Structure formats: C-alpha cells, structure tokens
Length: 244
Image (cartoon, rainbow, N blue to C red; front, side):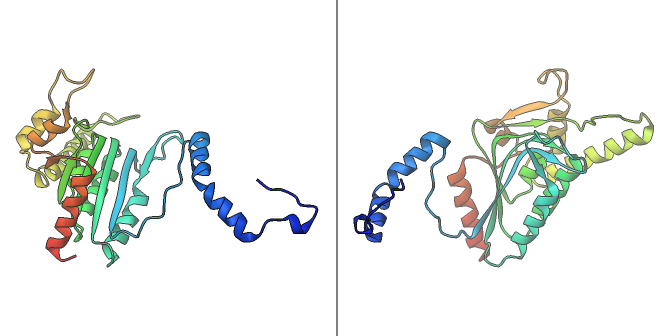
C-alpha cells in the first residue's frame, strides 16, 4: 500500500520497504489465489523435454467457431519441426484430451510425430476420441489414464455431402488410411480394430465403441495405463537409450 509522507525524514528506507514486501509476499500470493483463483508459481529450470498438448477439437482447413476449444494443426506442425531440429530437446511428451476433429489434419499430425527421430511418448487424459486415436498411437510409447476413454468409430462427414460413388470411395480410402496407420503403430489387429469401429449398440444413434483406459490397453491400442510420472520416466529412459 502506498503512503505519502509530508516530511522526507519520516519516509522508510529502501531496505525497509524491501523487507516488508518480502514478509508480505506469502500473504499477497494467498490473496491472489482468493481473488483470481491463481497462485504465482516459482520459476522452473529449463527442461530438455518438450511438452505439447492436443486439446479440444482438432481444427483443419475449416475455421471453427471462436467459442470452441481447438488445436490448430498449422500451429502444431511447426512446433514439431522445431523440436526435431533443436539439439537441446531430448524428447517429446504429447498430452491429449481431444474429441477428435478434422481427419486429414489429425493424420498429418500423426504422420509427422511418427517420423520424428527424437523419442516420443503420448499420454491420453480425459479423452482421445476419433482421430485422436491415431495421434495417440503415433508416438514410440503410449499411456492412458485409468479414467480416460477413447472412442473408435467410422469416419463421418459433417455438412453438405454430394451423394455420388466417388464420395464414398474417398471415404473408404480415408478410412483405410486410418486403420492402416493405427495397426502399424500399435499392437491391435486390423480385424479387431474394424470390429470395434463398426460395433453397434454402444453409442447412441451411431456405431462404434468407447474404450476405458484399461480396455484400450487390453485391446492393444495403447501400451500402458499410467499418468504423468510414468510417462516422463519412460520418455527419459528412451532418450537415454538413444543417447539423445
């Protein structure tokens, strides 16, 4: 709190003001927590592992409404290139909580992650639905939280669709790309993945399957149930093995 002093001699010294400010630091932090719901965190040392998040809906060529929580693929791709080129970065931790989104954009992200020379580990928190599945399995090793879920379903189009044979052929080819990518980067078989994709009765007015964390591991889609600690531990182990 600022005070005005009519007599300069009454003004406290700089050292006294600094001491009082330091003593009140904790009280100020608690006040910030009460008023804004945020607490100022201490500065952390620079990490040699890069953390990237895939949150909300994956935005592709169409711009989504501003109220939607989105991950723009044109922002993600340059970050991946920067991690790959940075000699100080020993690995990439990918955290997902996504409902899916644009199929081509999601596959572009997944393909770039799979082609990186740096070690990569993914962690599904909350959800890794739809095209989030291929992104989750694109890393060298994948984790999923026990309470997280993944939705496996066929490719769907939104908006106006031209009902011609070429449209359905395109959908078939795109769906085959998704199946092939998931099978090549996980332990699940193509037959099992397609069976989960076209299963009826689990999703309202739709076909597909919702897998919990342990179910995704048992199906061979994800490698292990775990959280941030095991994910970082695995990433550091992979980096040490490769001499990164």
